[in-house]
Length: 91
Image (tube, rainbow, N blue to C red; front, side, top):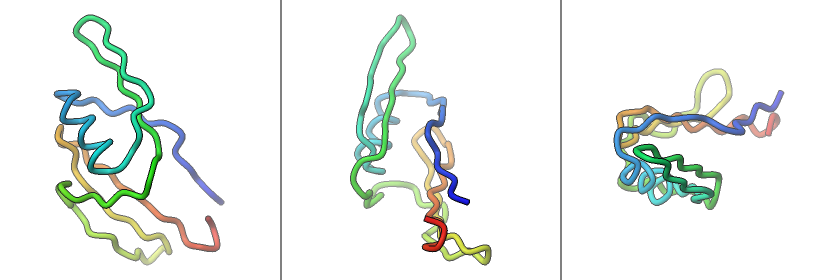
């Protein structure tokens, strides 16, 4: 079974460092940036393969016993982001 993430909502303390993290550090592309009063809605999506330099690494890429390879980083608001690569026979 292939499972893919289509969207995920992440609350952040400050949108500017969050945007820099998700765009510049993780390599996601800015899709939408809309301000409404004191709120700001930012949408990012998959872009080029990220290098993740400058990210707080929580877990280096690791082959897990259940077959996947994953890693974890932390964004500027303290949210842990896990990145997963499914086994080749499931991708």
